[in-house]
Image 1 (tube, rainbow, N blue to C red):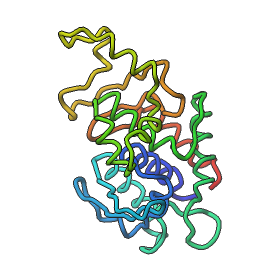
Image 2 (image 1 turned 30 degrees about the vertical axis):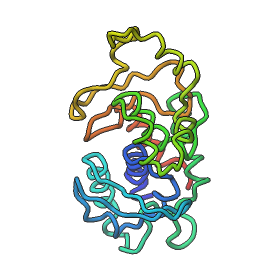
Image 3 (image 1 turned 60 degrees about the horizontal axis):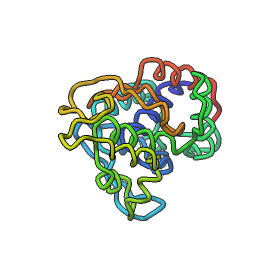
Amino acid sequence: LQGRKSRDLLLFTIGVNSGLRSGDILAIKLNQVRHLKPGDRLVIKERKTGKQNILMVNKAIYKAIRDYVKDVQSTSLEEEFLFKSRKGKNQPIKVESLNRMIKEWCRSINLDGNFGAHTLRKTFGYIQRKYYGVGVEVLAKRFNHSNPSTTMKYLGISDQEVDAILMHDNDGAPDSDIRDGPKTSLMIPQKVVLSKTAPREFIPGCAQGRSDMLSEDFEQTVESCGMAVSA
């Protein structure tokens, strides 16, 4: 069980900080990330599309990698998968197992919703759009979606949300709480306030700054579940 807590926390951290598909995250090997530092990038080939994508290492990912490597450095080989399953010889966790793990994490903190393997990727996109005001076109490029309409469905953009913009006054001042608007700096960590009408496919309560997207409660949940969830 050595390294299970830090492994699961690293998996969660990469997921909500990168927006990569879970299958591509699970395919990463230890030697690909062991020596990466903040600002470094790892080029990967998407299994689903065959396109190139990148994992950009921010401070949160760097810290999670460092903590995990520290836990497993005496037992792991360079060619091992970063998220190694307990089953088989050097096999990665399966997407189906990750799906169960995320459901268990969310149940443990009484989150009711349609959570699964895509939740981390969707949470990344939802926070970028709702908190930072990142446009759908930019997120479509990040997700490697060929059509922004796919991204709109992916992020849970509803007809009601589109209708709401028609209530904005011509002077540019929205009627809704300004906390939902884009911030001027990405360097100021604050709590994300998600709408009660948000699709229940995203993990609420993440603290978002360049260095941290994890709420303390959820971080503790992932750590505590790491020893209990089979993968």
